[in-house]
Image (tube, rainbow, N blue to C red):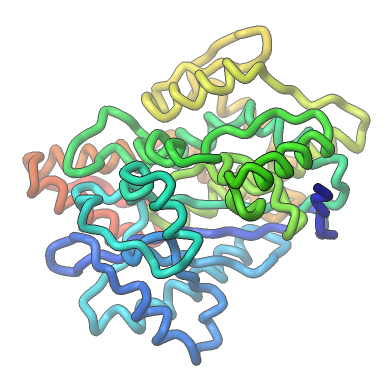
Length: 383
C-alpha cells in the first residue's frame, strides 16, 4: 500500500467546527441538517458548511488559510449562512462536546453510506455518538516530518483536552468527567489514540492491513485523536471538544498551529522531538478527560508530573515567539483567559447549579451555550 502525502504549504491552517442544531424553545436537538444543506445549495457560502454523522449536526469549515484569524472568519461566514436558514425554523446553533440532555436513541443518522456502515458495525456504541468536536489541520511541507510531529503532539494532548473540555453532561446526567465526549468517541473502531509509528512504511503497512481485513475502506476512516491527513498534506488534531464560542475556538486553533510550527522548526534544527511511552499517553488522556483543569499530568518519558495549570504558562512562554510569527499572538493569549475564568465544562456546571440542577438546570445550560455562540466569547453563569 502506497500512501501518498499531498504537497502542502508549511504551517497553512484549516479549522473544522461541529455544531448542534437545537430548538429555540425547548433546547432539545432538531434534526434539520439535511434541510439546511439543501437550502444552502445556491449560496456561495455553502462551501463553509458540511453535513455530519447525525442529522442534528452541521460542520462549519474554513478554506486553507495562513492564519488562524482568517480561518475563524471563514467559520463565521458559515455560521452566518446557517442562521439565515435556521432562524425561521426557530432553530439555534450550540457548541459543546455533548448535548446536555438529548437522548441518543432518538437521533437519526445522516443518509450516507459511510455513516450507515459505522452504525452497522459499532451498533449501540455507534448510535451513542451525540458528540461534537473541533479539528485543526496544519500543513506539513515534508512527509518526513509528519510522524515525528504526530508522535510528539501526543505529549501535548492534555493541554488541548483540558482547555477545550466542554462535555460534563450526557443523557441528562453529570458524568463526573470534564470531557465525556473523549470517552464516548474513542469507543468507535479505529478511533482514539494513534499508534506511534517510527517510519512511514509502518503506517502504510497498517493501512494495508486494515484495508485487507475490511476494517476500513479508506484512510479517512482512521479517526485517531491526532492523525496524518495525507490527502490534504496536513497533520490533523482531533482531540478537542466542540467549543462554545469563536473566541475559544481561535485560542485552541492558535495553540495547535503554534505547537506544530514549533516542532517543525525544531526538526529543521536537527533536534529530536520529545515523546512518551504509550502507557503515559493513555493515562494523560484519561486524566485530562476526567479532571480537566484539575488534572495532574505526566510531563515526560521520565514520569515527572505537574498540575496542568502550572505547566501551561511555561508552554505559552515557549510558544510566544511562534505566535507572533504566525499572526495569532492575541488568540494564543486567550489561554490565560480560560485559566482565569474557567473552561466550558466548569461554566456549564455553574449554570446548572445556579438554576437548581435537574431538567431546568440543563435547559439553562443549553441556553447559555447558545448565548455564548452568539456572543463569540464566554459569558458568566447567572441564576
